[in-house]
Length: 339
Image 1 (tube, helix red, strand yellow):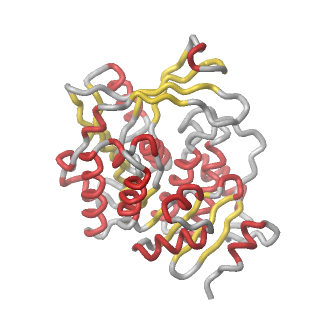
Image 2: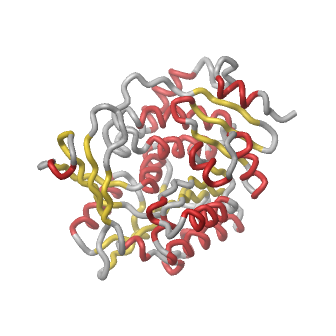
């Protein structure tokens, strides 16, 4: 058995988070954290007990040392993180919003060390991982990082490993919307499990209905698709089944950043534990709901003990997913259920 359960890759940035609300230009005090959708998922899976290898690059600077130290403290194997003497660690500023709205984020990542990831960053031992999780962010960083994304996903799928993919669209990083759509869909075709948000799926496929979006990716080679519907929950479809799993009610949304990463943590962890796709969506919804109740990108991701106690207590009596007949979303999807 491989010593690496999951391989994840991408850019972890340092993040300076405002300690007071208001425009970033007026904020005087910040605290330092890390940020990055790919590493958020890696951290979440590590907290659940998986051995996660992290492939990335950081600058030979204080922010790079801070990023690596933080990831190591979260249990990630960072032996495959290269230190770049020529290019800096990317960073961002993030506003503080106390009303549950999306925060203002300003990025400083152009030409960062992670944008210089390339196929040469791949070492043979990484290809022994049981599972690869990929997103659409690294291929947006640079041509070389895009080439590495294709290489990793192709080699892992050809080797019989499972591959998950979250589009995680970042339009501002692409030369054009058309290029983004083309390249992201090419990458999605290499994955077994595709995890878009509804707005992402609509943009990428041209279809409005979740059932049609899922069918698009199934036709491209995916084995299963889960589409995030925000507070409504999520829709899933495989070649044999489909379903709508209601969201978990949240009374106090603190920070929306990282909810999709929490969803991915739930999906991947449950599927690697051989749970059904429907059960995986239910766990994903719960972890996503937990993420928005904590300030920070990954602070709300649960440990294995928290998952065991809180999730299993909340859902012990209803592990099977259900169509919400009274919900417009559920009723619409149910009408399109395969015969």
